[in-house]
Image 1 (cartoon, rainbow, N blue to C red):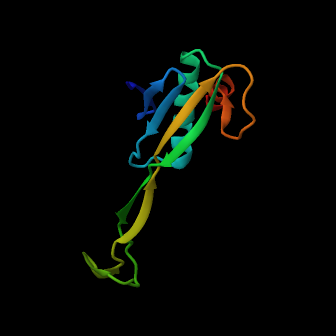
Image 2 (image 1 turned 180 degrees about the vertical axis):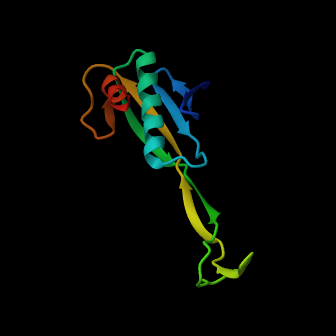
Image 3 (image 1 turned 45 degrees about the vertical axis):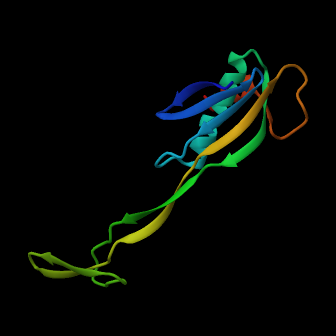
Length: 140
C-alpha cells in the first residue's frame, strides 16, 4: 500500500508516495512558469528531506520520467513603423501606426516523476547517489 505525503517548496509541491520503507516515488508536477533548475531543487530537497526523516543517510535516483509540459503563449506585438506578418493598424490620436501582430512562443514548464531509494553507510559508486545532509546544505 502506498502512503502519500506532500512537501511544499516556494508554492510548488513535491508529492511523495511511499512504495516501501526505503523506496519512494517523488513527483513534481509541471507548474506554469516552473523552470528546470527550480524543479530540480524542489525534487532534490524532497528526496533529501525524506531520506533524513526516515533515518537514512543517502538516496539514489533509480528511475526518472520527464513530466514536463510544453505550451504556446502569445507575446503582444510591438508598435513599429514596419509591419511583420500578421500586423495591423493601431488608431492613435496622431493617426494610424502600423503594428506587428502577436508573436507565439513555446514555453516549457518542467516536471518530473522519479523513484528514489534510501540507504545508510557505504554509498554505491554511482552518479545518481547523493548524501542527504550535504544535498540539503547545498540547496539552502
